[in-house]
Every structure is written in C-alpha cells, then in structure tokens.
Image 1 (cartoon, rainbow, N blue to C red):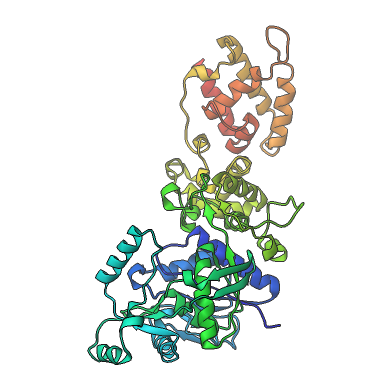
Image 2 (image 1 turned 45 degrees about the vertical axis):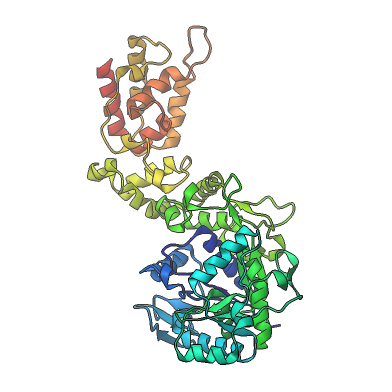
Length: 518
C-alpha cells in the first residue's frame, strides 16, 4: 500500500474560512493517523480574487492552530528534514517551497498546465472554444427561458473545422480549451464519506480547462498538481462533488491512477442555510481576535461533521486524541450546523483545562485592550495579581475577550450608591454592624493566611449565625453588604474571592469606605 499523501490547497483570498480550516484539519488528522504526509499548496490561478498578504496569513493561521505540514509552502527555510530540497518562491517574497514534488504554487506551473491542456486537444479529449462572452450570455439566457440546465452547446466542437481552428489560432483569436465529455456514459466512484456515487455524463458540462488569460481552471490544475505531488487522497467540501466526474475523466485521459475522494458535508447556520458572512463570522482570524483558544477551535471544528463513534460521549479532545480517533467512517453525510453556543462551551472547558501560567500568557493581550487595565496602578498589572484575577474569572469565562468584564473593581477605585449595601430592607444600623463584623474577621486573618479557603471558612462560619426576622438562616445579612462594599456591583464574584484578589489592606479600606457611606 502506498504511503498516504494528502494536501490542503487554499486560494489566497484574504482569510481562512472555518470550512477551509476543517478541510485542513481533516487532512492533517488523516495524514497523522495513517502515518502519511500532509502537503500545503497554493491555488492562485484566479488572479481576480488574489489578496496581497493572503499567503502569509494562511501560513500564519494554520501554524497558530498547530497544524504542521510536511512539505509545500513555508515562511521559513528552516525545514526539519534536511533531505527535503528547499527553494525560494518565484512569485512571492519571503515564501519558501520545500519538497520533491513542487512547485507548490500554481502560478509557477503555467507552462506545465498549458502542455497538458494541448496534449488533451491533440488526443481528441479537449477542444478550442472561441465563443465570446456575448454568445455565452445569450446561450445561458435562452437555456434559462427554456428551463434547461446551463451547459455549453458544443458550438465550436460541432461547427468549426480543424482548418478554421488553425486559422483562428494564427490570428490570435481569444479562446478557451474545453474538456470533451463523452456522451451516454455513467461515471461511478466510491466516496470515502458517501459511498458509491454515480453521474450521467449527458448532464455534465464541457468544462473550461484553460482560460483565455492562459491560466488553468481549478479542474485542470488540481488534477495535474495531485498527480505531480503523488496525492493519494483528496479531501474537500461537498460543493466539489459534482466536479468529480470531470476530474475522473481527466485522470482517465492522461492514463493516471485517480486518488480516493472524500467530500465533506456543508457547514450550515442554525437555520440550516449555508454558513456565510451575512449571518456571522466565518473567518478563523475573527475567532482568534475574540479570544477563542486554538485548542477549542480545533476541538469544535473537528466535530463539525465528525464524531468519535456510537456510544462515545467524549466532547473535549486534544489534537493528539483527535489524531488517534479520526477516521472517515464517522464523518457525516448531512450538513454540519455551526452552533456558536457549542463553541463557547468548548472554549470555556479549555480555559479551565490549560494551566494558569498558560492562561495568563494568552489573556494578557486582552487585558491590555481594556481601559480599566490601562488606567490601573502598576501593582494591579503584576503577573501575580493578574493570575489571581484569572483564577477567579476562569470558571466563568467563555472567551478571553471577556476578561475583566464586570470586574473592573479589581483594577480601579469604585463608586456606588449606598443602597447597594442594603440587604432586604436592612436598617442602616444593621448594615454597619454587618460590615463591622466582616472587618473584624478579616483583620484577624494574617497576610500570610490570606487565602480564599481561609476567607471563606471564617466568613461563612460567621454568616451561618445570622437569621432573618422569622428566625430562618440568612447568610446574606453578612455576605451581601460585604460583597457590595468590596466590588460596588450587583453581580460579581463571591466576597471571599473578591477579598482574596484585592488583598487584606485594600479589602479593609473598602469596608471602611462603605461604613462612611452609611
């Protein structure tokens, strides 16, 4: 059995779509699961959609996600395997190509595509088409009026003699090269996701292979690339399923063995419409900026169309665990719904899962974007202090962009109406007594023993002794005024957590300030 070789082939259009990340992830997982190679190539033959800097962004985003590839395009010449040839890209600055089967950038292979396209024409499997945009538009409009599928009518194949073709070529008439689809044939193949798939060639259009600008279409280029790179498995979105018979014909015409295909289900919005920018973010970069962890994004994206198997309940996976469990037998045929609430939940689980040191390093940039942090004193910006804040917040965080939200009192002085201190109509005198009691308890806890556990133990013991007018236990008589005094907020972490982060001196100062309000 040949070594598995898969490729991710994005177009440099500006950002990495979530759907593209899923394709790259499944490529990576399958390659690693089978001990194969993962190749990154660039499909840049559609020059109209090219965005400056997009190649660099693609490499950066995939690298950020932890999806390392074995050969293809890189931003560094330091490739791990010194046996792999490394060379500078012809068309991109600061981009390197590494591997035995390049070029890995389509715009560097135009002469190769042209040679193969002309070979198809010479062998009678393709033909020159000189129809201009006006005639093609007229044809499409007529077919739409007749409620027929839009297909080229083979005018140039049927009505232009070889002599006329040669004359037009000599006159430099604009042309495209079209694939000649055989009539009355059924093309059948086994898809790794969908099983046996069949196509009637009478319903397959004569696809353009070479455009008038000299660039190949996806259909010709990807087949040639996959053959050149010795790709064994092509993993791509469901939208390419209808193109597969054209690709299989090209493999047949060239006399090449076709790879195996896996067509992944569509990504859908909650309303089952196709995932699009109109209904929310679709770019991986958008989720990075919002503070989603790479582990959570990978975890979530892996589950968009795949599950670990019947009876499995695990939902949180490391990348290594995904590699171990991944196979195409558990990839769904139906569309996969992108549920942002599920992503939020998975992200919250990963925020709890990673170490506090790691969380601090990742969360720091999000703190630095907040005004309350920018204006805070230097003692509130220390690693020790910020780790305390994160220790309290991490149980509630869904994404890192939320750090400090509603908890600015950890970083700045507070101001609030004294009524916030009042618990269920408690008289001023009772509020003062409550705050006095809390203050004395906290004064008796040394700086060395100022821990969440000690604060909770001592304050809860005191709170258990309080009751309401009916004699029922009422811990809020002690804890509510204290929490309000420490945070100045209706909703906040517990008074034990708030006091632990603020420290003994700041906590006692805020109790004193609260007493002055009463």
